[in-house]
Length: 270
Image 1 (cartoon, rainbow, N blue to C red):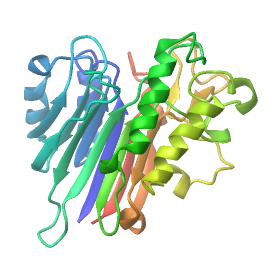
Image 2 (cartoon, rainbow, N blue to C red):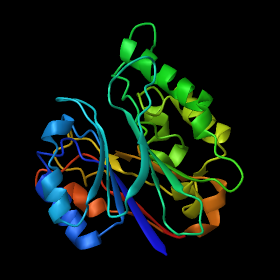
Image 3 (cartoon, rainbow, N blue to C red):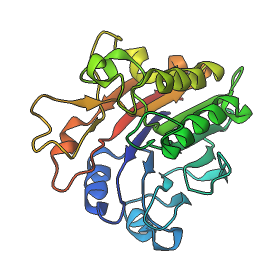
């Protein structure tokens, strides 16, 4: 079967539900993973998603901040929520899906990694210290170490642009949170510990620029194209050869009242 999954930091699902509906009507992914839903579970617009054909919804939300959700056409076999750094701050949810009778389940992790504030010094900035600790815990987390024929996917706003051409200016952003060497090293260590395949960089050479986020601070995001690749899709080795397509919907950044992130989509033959 062809399986399509999208990850999108929506920056308030209730504020941007019309944009999400527009995207789902046009693209129809099997699964949509959202971050920064900024919505308690009992206020999530589940009925709207169900009317769009997405009957299965897994939530880990809170009022006004953070929050992750998985919206799916495919039923869930199980759901799970993990906490990191002893904080109950709605940054992870996982679901398992049965995509074929003879296949092992597909396990999907959806993350919203802490942004880390503005000062790249863990002693001066508790938010940056939290981010580094969160990445360390991800690296050490046994469920994030798929092996053998395990069919795992890890997606989300990981809030790190780890490679030189994942940012508009490597030199100018080396001391800017999201592209400091310590963050890049820690995110790449998470990837290496789980033997994850970074789908974007598997399909697009490291020499090419890729962005998924453009700051609201720019009056016109297209001028200078000063983006960063903060949103990621990783797959386990067992799924590497199954990937058939990868897309970043840059145009979504120009929609009315957009998120500062855009949808990122992978297609696989399972």
